[in-house]
Length: 121
Image (cartoon, rainbow, N blue to C red; front, side, top):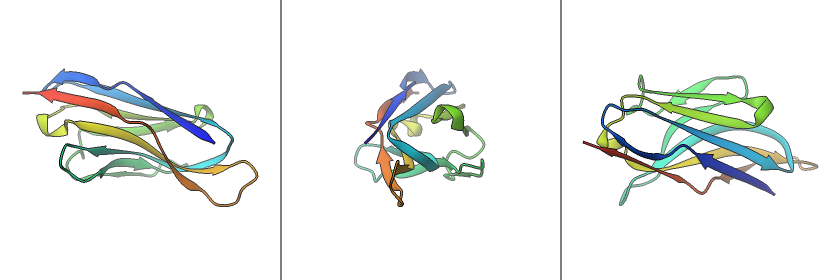
């Protein structure tokens, strides 16, 4: 159907920065909301940030002012610029998108495989 390929994770020291990317490919009719979620060990998956086709953004309280989400609709790609990283940002980050496939009517939730972000103190 569709594939979501994430990149940009890694290990960084506290205060550092990383940029995550996620590109969607496949039988895409349209993409609505795109976003990033994260899940730390023993924790529930939580919203980091999301962005609509028109550019309206939503952020989790813990990342406001530090992270910025953006998207390139022509490239079916969503980005997450993470600045001022803290050890508590350590988690697996997952790309998410509401994707409508070609010749279908209803979008469905598509997920990437996850990319590890580790922040050392």
